[in-house]
Image (cartoon, rainbow, N blue to C red; front, side, top):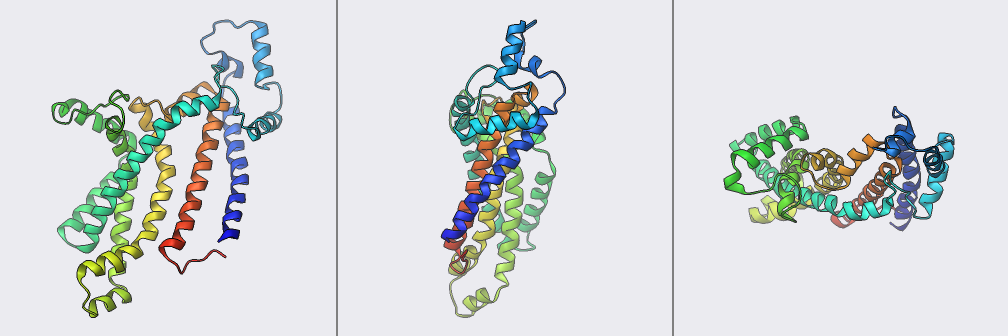
Amino acid sequence: MGRYTVRRLLQIVPLLFGTTFLIFVMIYALPGDKVTRLTGSEKAPSAARIAYLKHEYNLDDPLVVQYGKYIGKLATGDFGLTNTQQPVTQLLKNEYPVSLKLGLVGIIIEAAIGITIGVAAGLRRNGVVDKTVLIVTLVIAAIPSFVICFVLQLLIGVELRQVFHLPVSGISRGFPVSFLLPGVCVAALGLAVLSRLTRTTIVENLRSDYVRTAVAKGLPRRRVVGVHTLRNTLIPIVTQIGSDLSSIMGTAVVTETIFNLPGIGFQVAQSVRAGDTPTVVGIVTLLVLIYAVVNLLIDLLYAVLDPRIRYE
């Protein structure tokens, strides 16, 4: 287990280099003058101002040199400055809690609803509940996340405003109320996939020999389902939830923009439009680190859920 953990941690290094360089290249390839994007609304920046910006952001250097200097700063914990001369680390500190709360609400909604309806459908295979779950989740999976966001805003914010009293923009009512509707949006696709996965795994486990043996021994159905079936269903469920953490961060770019949430996703959208390379690369670096660590924790959790699994 120890060697496996060290090996996985070392794999994070080339992953960081690859993702940061890829983002660097994509931002570098954006059309338009780099200085113009940095000055923003400034009508006619002076020659001294232009020279300062070129020096500060190494704009006169080749792409590889720019990337090398950025990585050198990144190794010391310096993520650089945004186009507005604000430290990227301070930006992340201010906006990451919003995205973290959104992700937390989304994962809770996904796990609570997805696992529940998946188990209900799996235990009643080919029944009304099973067929309903399969149809509804198929429809949800086929709808783009931004469409779900707009539909929820229309229904909850306009048509049913007097019933739910939920905010459809901003974080004026704090946590968790302001994050409920956005949380449903980021959880929708993962919920559909998780419920179908849970249903399929339950059905397969109910056909397995160890479940048949437990039934033949006369064990109560609650014990057969709760201990023998659900425990062996947890591994694919945990894997799916772990992978959904990264997809939730991706969906947050659209969701936070639509619901006007000042989080990392909203900032990514703004920074890409502005060509703010340090901000985009800094946010992506943080997300890659989170994704790598979460996946490592999930892999280590396998050994807890199934003692037969070893990584030595």
